[in-house]
Amino acid sequence: MSAATGRHRWWRAALVLLLAMSAVRTVTGVDELTGSGVVGAALRLAVPIGLAGLSGLWSERAGVANLGIEGMMIIGTVCGAWAGYAYGVWAGVVAGVLGGVAAGLLHAVVTVTFGVDQVVCGIAINILAVGVARFMSVIAFSGLPGAGATQSPPVRGTIGTVSVPVLAGGGGGGDLLGGLERAQIFLLSDLAGIVRGLLHEVSLLTVVAVALVPLSFLLLWRTAFGLRLRSAGEHPAAADSLGVPVLRMRYYGVLVSGGLAGLGGAYLVTVSSTVYREGQTGGRGFIGLAAMIFGNWRPTGTAAGALLFGYAEALQLRQASAVHVLLLLGAVLAWAAAIVLVRTRLRLAGTLALLGAAAFALFQGTDSVPTQLVYATPYLTTLLVLVTVAQRLRMPAYVGIPYRRGDA
Image (cartoon, rainbow, N blue to C red; front, side, top):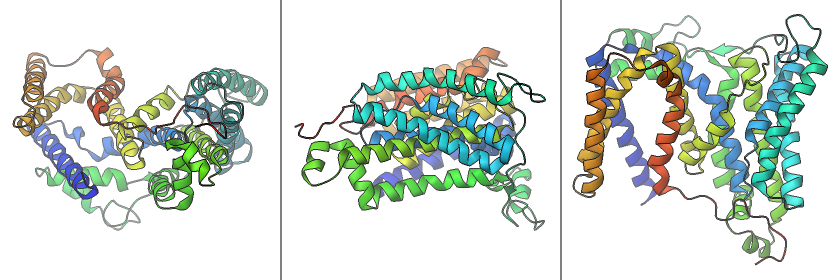
């Protein structure tokens, strides 16, 4: 399949999804399904997940499995909160990145230089980070007003937000997309709500995080440096024979991975909140790995996966009843997929049709879903996505395998 064909397939899938969401919103009257409020919240919630996914992508493209992303994010949160309180919010961002780089350096030394099992080292970093964060918070925050061993005082200052003028109400120049969203026009209002959510009151740090997605693609797929780094994860012996410094490339990948994870942790204490709290990462490092797998180890796919998980979480936070509507949306999408596959994969099409019928029956037979299911929606989405895309995944060939010069 050519790149152009793949892009066309993604655009068609996005159009089908938008049509289905618009139809479901019109039938049910749940405007939050495509509202700018939910989309904006989804973007904010997706950023730390996306940064964790990019963190895993850089490391694994270099051939080093990084299961310690959660721990690196934890170090980023506590370092960011300490520097943010002492020196200001942007100093907290820088400190969070440096804390993540330090944790990444530890992972690189242990796995790349000494060849310790990468999975075991990643798990050890997660465990170690919890203890280090508690130790640092006791040292830095005990005795301060409103702080203690498990919480920091608020960081000094805030990171500003931007809105696009004319389109999304920036600079007092009108809000064209907001007017279209409120008009409740089929498809057009839904598209306006989605775009406005991405352009209205967006944090400057969110802009930086979003820019890292195309930047990662350009560096990894359009530069000689990226080719060398990816070759260290695809076939290190062949790369070594051509003069590529494999171990150095793996170090670079893991250090960038740690910095991105630390930035995700700093985002949690400067944008998502203004304080550090123990357990603040909430498993986002692991969900980021799921987003990376969903994206098939590519930046754009990783970003799409992060937005999906962020949207699921935003929906249950903003309007719990909207999760019930997801049953109807799931039924519509399952039937649409069954129609597409009926000529080529009859068995799969039949299975999807039955699943769609079951989801529709559940929607019709209930007025709401249990609270436990509402809170579990992001994690259920993670499992469903991984099961759905498992057949088309292709991880770097030598990820997780230590390399020594001269190995075949």
